[in-house]
Length: 305
Image 1 (tube, rainbow, N blue to C red):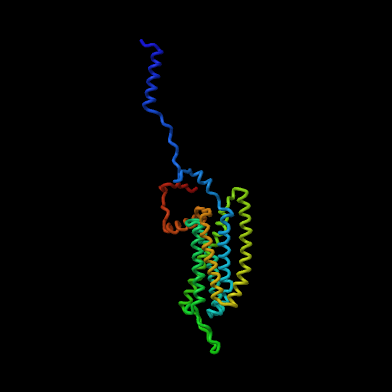
Image 2 (image 1 turned 60 degrees about the horizontal axis):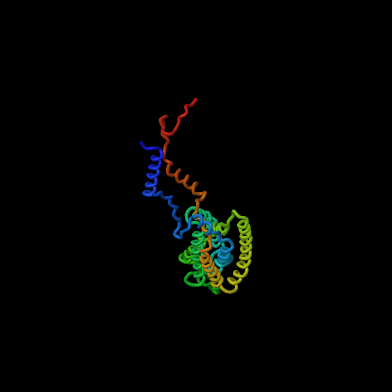
């Protein structure tokens, strides 16, 4: 018979042999979530809002873009009457239709930005579209083939634009409408995205951003409606359109220079998405009839009293 001490010694030696033969392993640590050996939380801590470091590029882009757009179109009615030899009613119709499309396009631009592209990409495409429109307007004023010839004062004859000339003018205005549709709804939100609204410093930065935004807007209005209009009337329409086009090109370059400093917010969906889905579903099921009878799966028929 073995004593209790011998049994305990034998069991302890058995456990010691098993522990040496099959060593226990601590659970492995989770692998880093990026290639630099940093976890996601550490990466988020290092990624800070652009703040005022990004503001020179954001405000510079918006200021030059507004100066170019307002300077180009501030005296556009006079250009249609003098250089394109349009009637007053026809020129007014062109401007009214273009203004209506330009004011409606931000709704579409906001939907595309919130649902698919994001603010940065939308602004990038829109600024390029605006530049294409302004470049086309400059070429229209520069090249004789793209605008009507001067009026013959002696014969009192003025030829209006041909169909091709009018088509190129409409194309230029279409590019400008596309640019306005992407820039107007995204410029202010993109600037606000550069600050952390959860901190006191970020809230002060947002307030200062709005102050600078509307201050530069007022200064742009004064310069565009005085200096640029003076150049168009007194110097030439080519210079009056060419200067805003160069400013628009500078705004594009300035916008892309600050890409490393920006904070990019992913699109999270638009309020209009649900409305559009309901309208599309209702249109697709417009011919569906509700079955008669009491045996309808998923429905409870309440008998009438």
